[in-house]
Length: 277
Image (cartoon, rainbow, N blue to C red; front, side):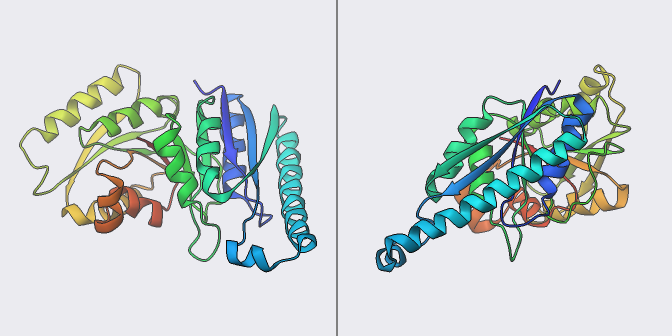
């Protein structure tokens, strides 16, 4: 059951898909929600700071504080409209310490919610990675194009038999038990095809069915480099409204250099994704 969640608030824009989506989760589960925001100290490069007068540096900080205050005000106004229990948390941090601060805070909540990075806008990559690797909690990633609130018509659980996938499915159980339909989706390729994958999928399906989850097992074939594309194609074809998957089955270095399902989904997600590491 989800009793509390924390959402990273956007401060540079009025529109905040993660905030709006998080509030619908809180409403669905009657959960307490905390809006988190950062005021970044010395957010300009060091060489620029050295050339800026102290008065101008202070002005930069004041402008940041104004944006954070406005984001907090919007958050509370939206929470009040939905009659939700809500509070906020603001931290003054250096940019390189923000991921650890957010991850530490997230450890004390059932779920954290954050928006996907925008190609020409907000860069949340370091915060997302910090949450995935350091919080020990599931992370709900919201596409920057997201308009709808929480929908559980069909949830796609990506399954490869790994520890990360098992953790993600377990963490997603509060959503899965409320879903209209759940698909265990297995991508087979030259690295994973071993004749037992279907059996493993059926076993996980049986486990979910024991929790009264309406589940079916689906498989497809795709090259290792196209796993993310195969997942997104299936999500589109099945009109799914949420993905559940383990994060970073390979090392972060390998994912960064060669790509991988996690990185592919983070870059191209079309529906909200619950990830666990």
